[in-house]
Image (cartoon, rainbow, N blue to C red; front, side, top):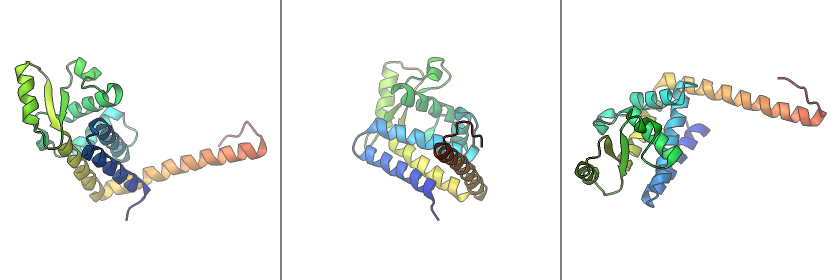
Length: 184
């Protein structure tokens, strides 16, 4: 049975696919990387973002589909897209990750790879956005199939909603009583 967070993730996937079909590559990447961020939090809680992001990729996505691209490379690409809208992140500038360039639709990653070799771009790799998106969706399905994550996800959501309810109750009481010093 689906719940609101599952429907929200599915909406992110659907939105990303709509963006891809309409040649809106950057918005599709932003949605995909944000989805992995959310899924990492759902699976692993309040670990640092880099750790939960890469752990989710390593655990739920098939790394064989990406050759020499690691989960850390994908995290670096996430940082680049979300923070600078370029292929460069702080991690790539420090040569800690490869710079990812993207192909999509009917385009082949091979053509871009040939161009990188011609201009001697070291540390540049190409990733097909459509296949990466499908792999994230497949990873989400694997994530949902694991019972221990379903229970953990439910526990985290309950905790989050309880905290939200406390804040709302506090605001209502504060407004109704004009009391500034209410602690929950």
